[in-house]
Length: 483
Ligand code: FAD
Image (cartoon, rainbow, N blue to C red; front, side, top):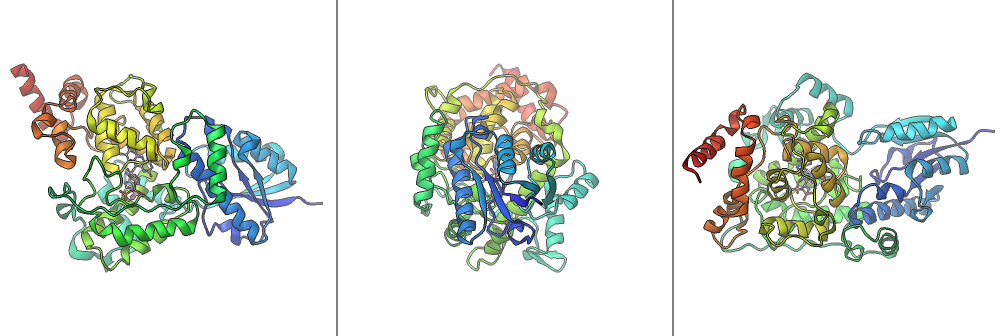
């Protein structure tokens, strides 16, 4: 008698159209809600609710279609490998298919569990991205150390997105000159971010997560994210209709009282398959209202930065351990708990940190120029920083954290992902976010002090970098004057 051929649906692969659903060989679908997996770090509880609720909704949809579903629920309190092993054994699975995982080590872990039980394996291509892994790897092998801009133009030509024949739409590749402004002085009307009310399934998960992970950050009762493909598409539609138009001009702007501004806030869903890259691109490029500068600015993030970071992660496994500046400081507990935050923490850092505890989200420039900037200036060890981002953000997974945190933000790679450290004093933050009551207070803030100290302390490591010659010259001038 033969066993069952099953497909394992990973938490980060909650696609409406997963290839397994069309695969005639598959007789059952397996879901593992691994409680132990969520114990590895103090993950924000909104992230746990999102993943578990999304899985339960997918499972319920399949069951409503009359498909066979087997689950390990959170309450079994199992590790991922133990949970999978249990499902294979209990349901007599002898062939298992799954979609290749984006993070290193996951496929190997599943294969090991299967090998122990003599289960044959098969994989579908990772559908979280636009670029097939083999093409991406080939590009990175042929273009080591090539900047994102070149990758982006290759993507535009390869896909034909925003192209007229061989020319870019609007006859320019880049509209940065029209973009990246601070918010207007007289104020601006920011549309409210709508979020779905939790249904019964999600409410159940919220209470289970509150009980099982009492010490993790984030209040499960204030969970706010879409958990189904339909809800995620409605959320995307709101962005395209209400915020995309002003995405470009204000993509680098900050405001103390506005956590989302004109950002899409789609990564929590996009990184787990509730939205696909294709549907995001279709919605954005077919928008009739938004100016080309905003559409191009957004497309650049999706087909450029997002796919480039995945390529970097695949091409450079050594990034995970890099520490070019030899930084050693450990993160204090309050970064994780949100309790006992020191009174003298600069206003922008305190505000964004509180926001991360509330939402598990901050927008790009706050991640890079407020949190990342401050963490680097303070000399925290890059792996400590990476661990914190991975735990606290609802959209964080190793493939995207390692290049963004170790590379772009903390300069642990010595200038592979970004060409210089993203550090600044108070003046830049004031220009883009008006964080202090006056420009003079920004200039005299701890941020500015920490900036000059960082340049001084890391002068030997940074002096070979041509993009740092001006800031280093300014620092030397101040030092020589005894400032
Ligand atoms: P928008 O500002 O609306 O941008 C549109 C989309 O572009 C995003 O949804 C995302 O898919 C893509 N994108 C833009 N920049 C990047 C980038 N550098 N890397 C990958 N995708 C990008 N992104 C994550 O998905 N998960 C993370 O955990 C994460 N952590 C970050 C940590 C640091 C220190 C930095 C500097 C960046 C990080 N990013 C991360 C990248 C980026 O900040 C987020 O993708 C973005 O803020 C998500 O919010 P949004 O959907 O509103 O994006």
